[in-house]
Amino acid sequence: MAGYDQGEYFCEMFGRNGLSHTRKIREQLANMDSATLRRRSKDAERELFNLGITFTVHTDRDAIDRILPFDVIPRVLSSKDWEQINSGIQQRVAALNLFLKDVYNDGKVFRDGIIPEELVKDNKHYRPEMEGFVPPKGTYVHICGTDLVRDEKGKLLVLEDNARIPSGVSYVIENRHLMMRAFPDLAEGISLAEVDDYGRQLMKALTAVAPQGVSNPNVAILSPGVYNSAYFEHVFLAREMGGPLVEGRDLVVEKDRVYMRTTRGLEEVHVIYRRVDDEFLDPKVFLPTSMLGVPGLFEAYRKGNVTLAN
Image 1: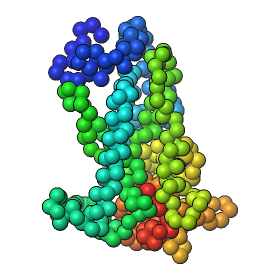
Image 2: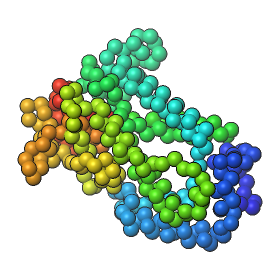
Image 3: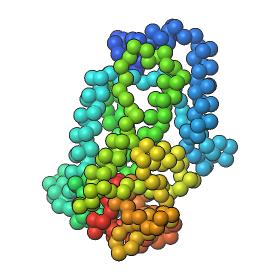
């Protein structure tokens, strides 16, 4: 790193005066020549492509399937930073859920003059169909992707909350796996928090919001299909959760209950983690021309027979 100048910016590896939690990784990198670093980086990128860990870019005619950009220099969070992030994000998601519950029901945030009503209700993503309805446990945001940045002093700040259909967690997990295969020496002597239990945690969270009285809920992931840019992640999560991956054509609504078509006949679905945008969910309620959704799905949701996550 001779000659490296971070300027006025905060550096994740060096901080301002050297970071103790990155010391061992800095030492490992210092012992590695640049040719080795580049070779391992190329090997890692080749492995990502061979494993199909890609996202689809339909606007690019030359490279439809792209691998996720892989940085051989890891971003290391200290346990202190992680404790702050962990507690802060929980608090933030709780606040988002309370905000959405108020927006679609009592509207106190408008009457108290905290937020102008038109700012919310004139937004294209506001759904009047949700007014007067509270989902199980008051949870509107089941999965949230919170983007973080640091200021020039290293203070953690929130850039935005992706609370509709956040994606990318599969790349986090696969990135960690690839890093441990390509650069196992970087992690020597470092205690790393695990990321492998995400599928189990996700299934636990979705099971918790199943309709009342359902003790062993059937949880499915609703995907737009193979042409969606995040389809790799849909397959990944279904595998990690141990639940079925379905498309709209695999589901049918009968008497306000949702069923999945299987080789054994119809099987009821109680929780749907949907990776489909609002307008495509139900042609009876939203976009009439949608071929991705399920007719009658929203009414089944409103009647409490199925839970739609996010």
